Length: 99
Image (cartoon, rainbow, N blue to C red):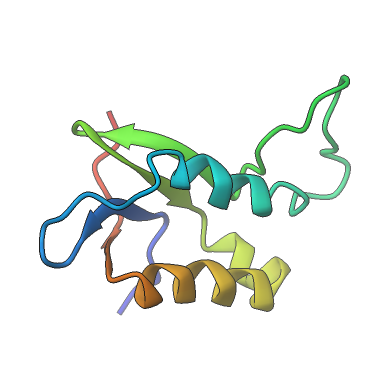
C-alpha cells in the first residue's frame, strides 16, 4: 500500500463533535513551526508555519495538513502530531482532496 502524500487532521472528533479550542489548528501548527526543509528558515520578524504542518480549511472543516515528509525529517515530531490526533479522537484523512 502506498504511503499517503498528505494527511488532514480534521477538527472534528470521531463522534462528530467540533474540537475545541477553536484555534487548536494554529496552535498545533505553531508547535511544529521549527521543522522545515534545509535552508527554509522563517523570514522577517514573525514565526511562520512549517510547510510540513499547516492549518487549513477543507470543505468547511478546520484542520491541519501534515506532509509525511515530516516523518522522515523528524520521526518524533510526526509521532507527536499523530498521537495528538489519536489522543483527542480526531478524524484523520489520508490524501484529502485539496481545493
